[in-house]
Image 1: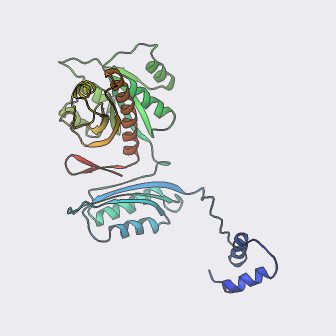
Image 2: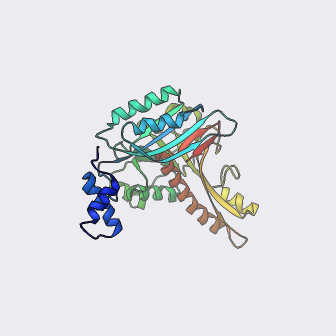
Image 3: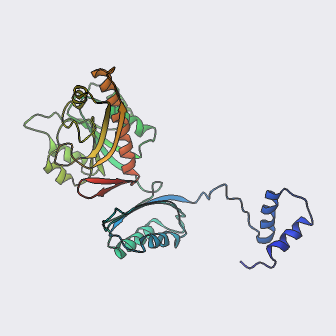
Amino acid sequence: MHLTCTFPEAVMAVTSKIQTPPLLLVHQIAQEVTGESLDSSTPSPSLTHGIHVFHCSDEVGIVAKLSECIASRGGNIHVADIFVPENKNVFYSRSEFVFDPAKWPRVQMDEDFLKLSKIFNATKSVVRVPDLDPKFKIAVLASKQDHCLVDLLHGWQDGRLPVNISCIISNHERGPNTHVIRFLERHGIPYHHLGTSKESKREEEILGLVQDTDFLVLARYMQVLSGSFLNNYGKDVINIHHGLLPSFKGGNPSRQAFVAGVKLIGATSHFVTEELDAGPIIEQMVERVSHRDNLRSFVQKSENLEKQCLAKAIRSYCELRVLPYEDNRTVVF
């Protein structure tokens, strides 16, 4: 745009005609000189939110190329998190940006980020547009205790969890008048009771029900999934452990913690691996306890932590905040 007068001349031209408060005067000057408004308080309704995560070997220029990729299509980065571990040649980033889908179509976006990943031979490059892309499809496995399951269902219902629940699978049978079954029937979510035994874990049947999901959630599912199941499923499985790993693994961690006289109890959400309760940790939460607590209050506090911890882990996963780091660790932005 070419202006025919300087900014001071425009000020004199306007102020010679009216007396106006300074802030309003600036807006009027801009409109008279350029024909445009400076009011940016209302964002453009056409802008959409996107998320991109990147993992590659570290080298000079990654951030510049990433910024160029987004800016060249009219996008604008709002949040950028970067992690480069000390003495390790590796780069992690998570960026949140806004863009106009009319100017940067979704297919073109995938092509642009694919080119970027090839430039740096990236290990991981994932882009997600929450308002345009389908929600993550999950299945939930649960046993008798249902506090985590109920919390997940309510979180899905009120929109706190950005997922679609395809089904609930349980080795525990629930009656038709229970809260869980009534909720599932009301919302059209299938419930599959697959009783297990030492001889049969029903893994083939479970696999058939969950094959088209994006990831699985174990909401206090008290069965160990075999390495064969995990390999055949081939996607992430998120578990909640009612204890602060790596301490108090296995069964009855609340009792273990109570007997040990700990002053902090916790809950851990982690990825499932072949080794029991040893997968990469996504989220942990703790609460103080004291000699005044009994086993019952230990359990109550633990269950509250489990619900919060599992829900936060699922949200973090869906928001692309969780990246694998080394063999058994995670980066959580």
